[in-house]
Picture 1 (tube, helix red, strand yellow):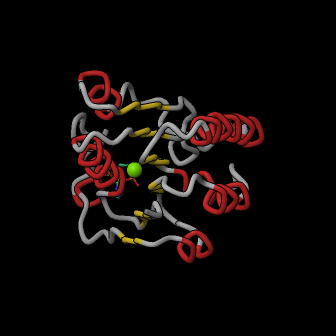
Picture 2 (tube, rainbow, N blue to C red; picture 1 turned 180 degrees about the horizontal axis):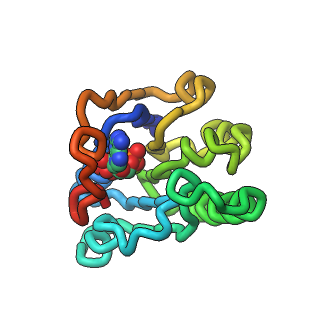
Picture 3 (cartoon, helix red, strand yellow; picture 1 turned 45 degrees about the vertical axis):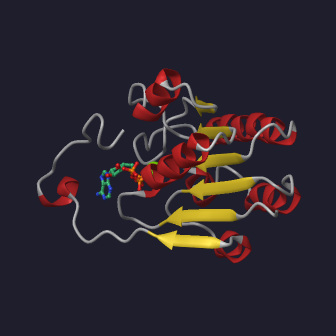
Length: 176
Ligand code: ATP
Ligand code: MG
């Protein structure tokens, strides 16, 4: 059966956690899962990495250490783009070993919208991915050409968020 492409985008909470929920569900049925997180640096270990280590499911969690420009506006963008593209290359190689049933590229849409990863590289992956692979992309600002190629597209729309209404800082176990 053809593996499909999922996109979780939009400015509301729930993209990464929806992707992680789907990944866990797939692994629960014995599927081999790779959950790769881009631009997650500077915040300590994510709950996803911990859950991956603690779990006996066939789920590998990779978390790249580069910091999102939203959290570090002073970052050298050329250097960051080189690193992000190397990260993407590493995941690309993993994908084409063809050992996974489901792969999540968490925050990859941000990598594109921030100009750190050429859109064409992501489109090439969507085009060339192993036929049976189920692929999940998350991040704000998914490009219309990515949306066009995807089978499932869900927009998380923010109605309220305590970071804005109360200035609540990111909470461990809830936001990361
Ligand atoms: P989650 O990881 O909780 O599923 P997400 O992947 O949809 O959320 P991102 O856009 O990746 O969200 O942002 C990472 C975290 O930043 C989210 O947990 C979100 O709650 C938090 N956040 C901080 N400030 C805001 C804000 N002003 N509006 C929305 N989200 C915010
Ligand atoms: Mg996210």
